[in-house]
Length: 151
Image (cartoon, rainbow, N blue to C red; front, side, top):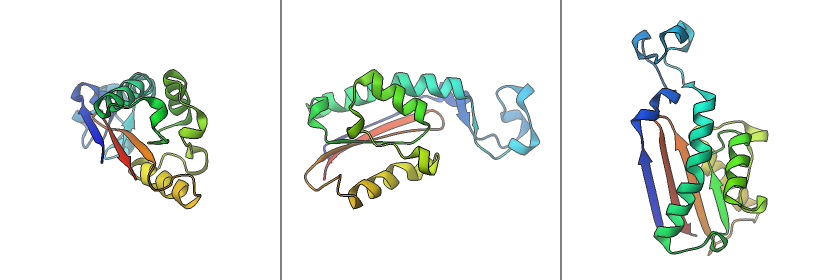
């Protein structure tokens, strides 16, 4: 482990959360009995959050490690949706071959997305021992974290 960064902002909970009763819905007009105990996501809010946070998280992680973007061999990211991944990648200027996308094949596999990509890319021979890999994830609440490893 080289470094890791972890953050949370409860103010963002209204964008991605799991209501357990009617009173948990931030917008009571959205109440639907079918959605109780299921993840609710306000797409535009999550998109804006992820696209603005992604480059900051990468920059913070690199800064704490004393590294530059080109020092990282692979960026393994939570597969929330292709638009978020592509927009964030473009905004930070990451090359396509350093940030893998598999959401088109598996969908949003939630907590399994990062280890799934690690396994796929390791088995394919793309991620190798000795390389530096940055793992990035976003979640409910809102939460976001990175972990930088030399494998």
